[in-house]
Image (cartoon, rainbow, N blue to C red; front, side):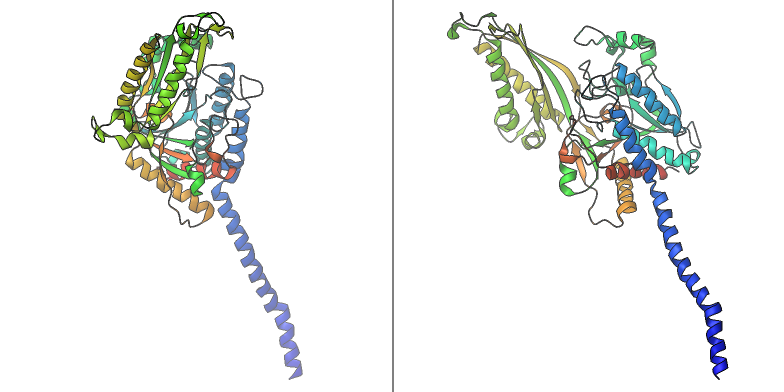
Length: 480
């Protein structure tokens, strides 16, 4: 009996126990391999590390020392064009730069003649900018397509996908927004080439300086045929605080506010600061100050000025109260000396609201009251409309697909989520506004810290960049 027990123990130690340990170890190794495989499917090396590194690299490409500034066709913009084109090449895309400096990267997919999905945002910046406004959408899109290339699925797209880095959206240099996307959508005539900056240099001049044709013919040829385009999507930082307040990295945009830019010129009587009595002055500076305060009052309480029965000209007064914003962002005087009553003061007005009819009504009222104020003060007043963009409603179908893609990205990173992806309105203008005249559009917002934008304090978490890239990838996967 003792011999049998010893033999059994020996057999157990020699054969059964090692196989059991091997099975347990194999199970543990299986879990590790599974976790590693899941990590690979999320592609953090491309969609997070590389994407963030590229955003930082692009943020160093500036025309100014000490702050980020990259305007239309500047030396820095040329460097940015080359850099982004190299990233598109790296993603396996066919690339080119068009006659307005827009950078294109295209994957033809299975049918190069099918209607194309366009994905875009802008390369230019405001003065003293952050690094995410515009480039985030470009980098995330290129990164998502690079993932498809690595997986060998770039050729499996059922329709062409084209990423476009637009040359000018902010309108800083020429005070005219969407120069890049408006050319492609056909919303701006060839006379746009004759728009000049403060130095008198035209769009045409600066394009020729950078070896572009800049002819009317070459400009008109930029317009895409609507029949060749399936839709347009854009990923952009929110530039507001809502996503951060609800604790979610992504939101779907349902519409973009319409906007008007005015230039107001007030002319008075220039004179000596010490010899003209206060009662005899025709001072454009004090008149401009009153006009600016009037603007603020009217925009804070629009119903007090344009509504008498809570409804005016087909729009609800409440729609203004909820979305109307007015900003004086620039003011200058001539001759601009401390001991001289100025002869002329100029300031800009940026006015935005979701209701186009309401926007026209408030502009009409503001203009009338400004003229009345100037007449009372014995100064002249000229109000010029420099830019108009109608409010845009995003396509419900595209928005639904983007919402599903955003949910998919959140689940892949964080598992099941309880909160729904929020639906937001955009008070800021985007290239999607111009592109809406060419095709249906959809937008995805990405959380930014404090809602801060147009500032070096602008910031997006690395993980939010990653999730935005995953969302685009999930959207593209529906087109495989």
